[in-house]
Image (cartoon, rainbow, N blue to C red):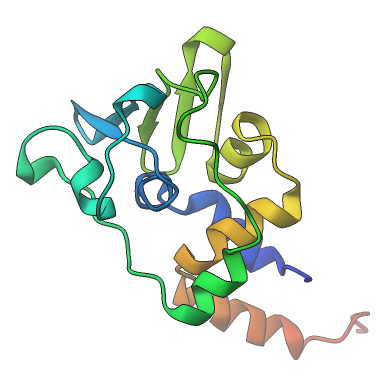
Length: 153
């Protein structure tokens, strides 16, 4: 699949917590909108919304995936929830994460590239059901499409 610059920009800015919850990660609120990924052995079965530890007002709820969205990402496996080497201790806030133990940090795409070691295509397939494009970018794209490649005076 080909991804537009707008898709990639939106994927970098996609909120991580709902995506991680849908992939089986368990998150603990850490204040100020921050979450910490808990170790594999603390994984809980059940709906994604119940995997956030802490007060109800701190819960992060991800969008429910439609059947078509689920089929698009079904070939992209999440990390084995029982794998003791599964990453933990990663702090997540909005589209940014920090993994102090590994001296790594980044945006949403980089989480899947660096932490889960996915290809760019797999990372985008995982993130794409959660993309929210900025309407102003569509307007800019339409304007650019009407401009000639070479401007003359």
